[in-house]
Length: 397
Ligand code: PLP
Image: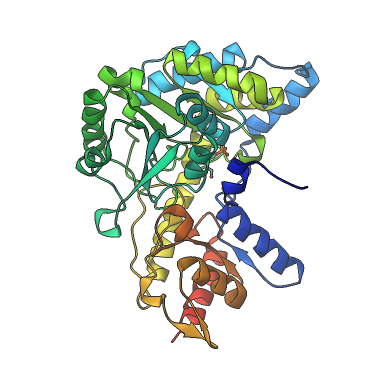
């Protein structure tokens, strides 16, 4: 019999990847699909990073690398965190992985026991709750509203803490809302951690270089709680390196050692060529991420202006990342050709089938009234996509 484990049966397919797959299918049938569903920069990896990878191949970086990453890469990551983020770490606190995704999964697997609770600040990145499921933990989802810029307050978190709470996790800048938690808001969360030394915060800072309002504040920079914070970051978004698969954690040594042990049994060290490329990214200047950020900022303003023209949408102003997360509740419950659009995922699917624009329904991000639209696309595609969305939403009655 074709049986599967209970835990795998309980997993959902990633909604983002599902929409992207469907969009590819429609495109292969000859439709002019504009994909705004995928979480991916539309830029090329910086030239000096590509050159470093080619050099690494020629220099013979062909063997297994140390499980936690090459020593010089770990040292360079620690140096970056000290210099740019004020996080007081050394190479021993760093574990390099096959993307921030693996880093996050490692940490959850390493610290969460069956039945323990993980407080997830929503809207949240789709994989968080599934990773908690894999560890047989329980997600406690706290959802920020568009009125509060999609942020959850320390007071709300305090109410959700129980003796079973093991971790709190969030991304800032946030996927899917683009919201950025301020220093003040994070210091308040830091106070909660101080009062609850059994809780670990997992701070996902993968979009840190795409912050339109200044510098990201890192929870891990608050010295009194540094043994309770795991900072997760990577190269995918800031350096346009999604396919290279390179991420890392900065963690208290006991967590770093545990994730190294786990990774050593599952995947070993990530690709050696990618690691040399990552080192070059860290050692080069930041002009490439900066230029990309400027382009995203321009497109954010463009997409906000275009979306404002669509009746009924409530628009947020993302402070970072490359997503906008409008509230579409005015359209839920409406119908077209006898089909009722019940959920934001239904709406997203209708937009894809009718207008050939892929977005992602907010249900899987913990915000059922919203849809996520990526603006990591050309101005031309953004203009055309929003025009099509406007026309297709007008068909709903
Ligand atoms: N964290 C967030 C919030 C993300 O949006 C993503 C990618 O979409 C990741 C982590 C994973 O990034 P990586 O490509 O480094 O695995």
